[in-house]
Amino acid sequence: MSELWLAWIAILVGFGGLIWSADRFVGGSAAIANNFGVSRLIIGLTIVSLGTSAPEIVVSISAAMEGSGELAIGNALGSNLANIGMVLAITALIAPMPIQKHLLTQEIPILLLVTVAAGIALYDATLSPLEGYLLLGGLIPLLYIMTRSKKGHPEELVDDDEIPDMKTGIAFFWFVVGLGVLIACSDLLVWGAQIVAEDFGVSQLIIGLTVVAIGTSLPELAASVMSAIKGHHDMALGNIIGSNIFNILAVMSLPGIIHPPVMESDVFSRDFMAMGGITLLLAAAIIIDYKVRNRHPESHGVARLGRRIGCLLLAGYIFYFFLLFR
Image (cartoon, rainbow, N blue to C red; front, top):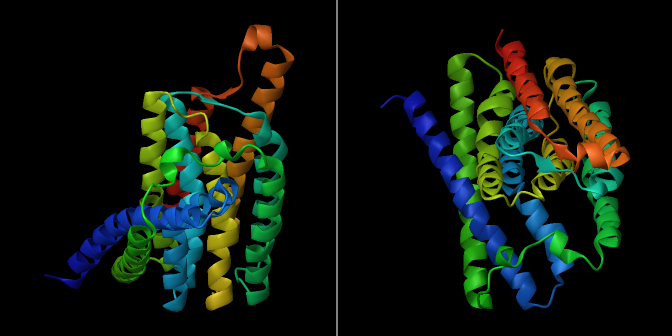
């Protein structure tokens, strides 16, 4: 069997292992925290919220330690593009998603702010340790703001079924197993992605933006689509926006801290601008629809992210791939 075939198998096995182990790792962590009396609010803000970005975080660490910082940066940018242009777009096409007021006052402003910060960091196609630490440090005020705003409403962050009811010993077992498999599968995925990039003659940045990013976004797509089909998608929009914030602060920052990458100039002019553009489009759609519908509720009804915007986001994502491979 050729090395290329082994690389593709490694990528597929890596993706499957990441999805399985992330679920076990987050479940074990949440159960341990709950058993030790940590509040549901803190568990929701940290373990559960960051858990959706666990595969991206571990892949980013693994790639950076292998000297493949471009792949890690591509994973962060590509995951944000996929979350909006693929996950939200397809979910909106299935069933329009309600727009909650806190998105306009909290999540959207924070997302726009951290997106601008990412652009400043990537403008020179490098990511220095200082820039990495500043981005990662942004998690502290973010968690503080969210803690103050969500006090008394922990149910907005975590459902009962997201904190498994298990004994501490079993929870610790799944925590260790989940973490171990998470690390092993991330190494496998990064190795496979490096081989594929070399064989196709494309940069690791491109592989991170496409293969790795889409693969790590598939769990969010599956969960969002199933929620939309069942009619339980009130929090889908907020969850994806939160995931994109964490991807910039907790995923993109790590290569700069571990092994500062030097990237091709297109990382800003093409990839960041595409992510920034589709993020701005989403924010504008949410703000405009919410303002219009709340000004005339009798004729427009509840504010939602509808199928028209879903089509526009999906078209933008497809156009980005055209630019990427033209």
